[in-house]
Amino acid sequence: MKKLIRAVGLMAWAGTSTLAFAADAPTPLAQLNFATVDSSLDTLYTRPAPVQRGQQQLRNADAAPVPIKEFAFDGDPKTYFGSLKNPTAKDDFTLVFDKPVTIKSITATTGKPDGTDKLDAGVIQLSADGTTFTDAGKFAEGVATIKGKGEKVLAVRIKPSADMTHPLAISEIAIESDPAVMTFKYPVEIFLNYDDAPELKDWCEKCAKICERQYYMLNEELKSEGYKPATVITMTLKARDNGVAETSGNRITGTVSFFKAHPTDFGAMVHETTHVVQHYRGRNPGWLVEGLCDYVRFFKYEPGKIGGINPATAKYTGSYRVTARFLNYIVEKYDKEAVHKLNKMMREGTYKEEAFKDMSGKTLPELGEEWQATLKK
Image (tube, rainbow, N blue to C red):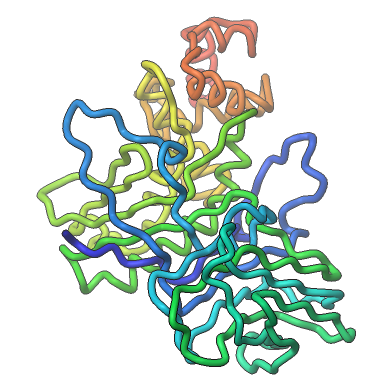
C-alpha cells in the first residue's frame, strides 16, 4: 500500500481571488483575517481501499471523520485534530494569521470527546513575526487559557513540554482578538501520493496548499442549504500516457507528464477540487458540469486568464472555458445567481434545461445564439 503524505500547511482562502458574495455575507473576503495551520505533526489517517468498478463511492459523511488539522480551529467542539504518532518536545501545532491581531484571550482545549489524548504538560506560545515564539501560558488537565496584554500577535503555537506517551488530540483553539480571526468554516486536508514522481514532492505540496486555500471560496461559490462538503481529499500523481486530471468523489488524480510540462498550471487542480465540492447527483450535462468548474476557476480564482475564443466555432455546449464564458454572460446580463441555482439543481439531481428559460426568459438554444452573436461584434 502506497503511503499518502500529508499536505504541509493548510490554508483557508487566497486574497488574490475575487468573489461575488451572497446577500448574507457580512464582510468582503479581502477584509477577513484567515489562518494557516503549520504543524510538524501528521494527521491520523489510513488510506482507503480502492473503489472497485461498479461500487458506489462512499461519501465523506458515511465514514468516521478523519481528525484533520483544521478541526482544531473550526469553532466546533465536537471535532478534533488527532496526531498520527506520539508528539515529542520538538513538535508543535501552529496557527499563523494573514494579519497580526491584538489578542484578548485564547483558550486551547485538548483531548478527544472521551477525555483521552490530552496535553498535560505543554505551553501556548505567541509570536509577533511568526518566527520567534515566547511562552504565554501552561496547560493543566488538557486546557490552557491566557489573557492578552495588548501585544500584536501573528502566530499562536501549542507545544509539548516533554515527549508524550500517546497521540495528541486538539479539540479547539478559541481565539478572541481584534480584528477577529476567521475559523475554518469549510475545514479540509489534502493527502498526497507522488510515488510515481517523487521529484514533484515540492510541487505537490505547493499545489495542495493552493487548493486548500481556495476551499473556502469554492464552497461559498457553490454552497446550497444542507450540503456539507468533504473534509478529506486525496491527490495522486500518476505516470500515464495522456490526460490532465480527473476526479472521482473526493479523489483527484493528475498526470505526471502534464504537470511536469505545465508546472504553473495549479488552476487545473483547483478545477478538480471544484469537482469535489460539486458532488453532483443524477445525469447532468457534462458540458455544463465542466463549464461551471471553469467558470469558478477563471472568473473567481484566476480572473483574466481564460484566454481567447473563436467566435465562429464557439458554442455554449463547448464545455470548459467556452461554457464558462457563456455562464458568465448569463450571470452578467440576466441572473447574478445563475451559477448558484444551476449548482443547487445539479447537486440535488433536479436539473432541467428549462432552468435557463426561468432565468432569462429564453430557451437554452436561443440564449446560446444570442451569446454567440455578441462574440462576433
